[in-house]
Length: 301
Ligand code: MN
Ligand code: MN
Image (cartoon, rainbow, N blue to C red; front, side, top):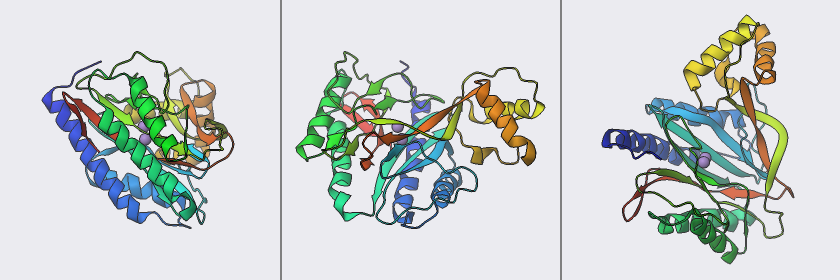
């Protein structure tokens, strides 16, 4: 794993500052009955206004959807009444990624489960330091969530981040899990507990819905529009996730669908399905990105 020089750390810090300001503005922006696309576009616009670039499309995942929903073009979906909404956003500055999330809870019944995700995140941050194993962090998160009467999602994890990389190789589990992997000074990690109800299965599975994509490896294609789209994706997003909303106007509209499908079927790009809780129970989430220091961590977001 790389240790970053001071100039690079300043890019991470700027990325984190832009993201923190955006998150706090979004907290008071999100409302019941608001179109989901309005939330996505607002967050992405704020990030750009502040001088960053979205590291991935703004995720707005509702109730039993834990992660990976963003609005497709012309989305008509609205935030339902009494919804529990995970807003997950990322910024990159010259490729250096920070990642944060909060839960907007419009259902008072789930207020304590929303607080539990925030508290588990705080506990993880209080515990994280050089040389601790990722398994100990997972154990601290799990214990904290269970002490509050809830259940962690066992198959979603935090992760190290890197340049143009959201998942840079190391996972930070949300449950006690055997691992000898140690946290290293100077590395940057996103920590993100996901919490559900005690009688839920406590795992997520792929749904049929896919709204977020990423370049895998550019394959040759005969379709000139697919070629053009692929070139744009490589140049603009590199290895970072994107949405079809960000591809509007790149090729003529009547050619887009065929070209995009061609990139998927040739496996030049892949999709990330929306994750839903297996027993369809509501999920909450909180997330920060931290830089590991000699005596603990610096919260970047
Ligand atoms: Mn995130
Ligand atoms: Mn993350």
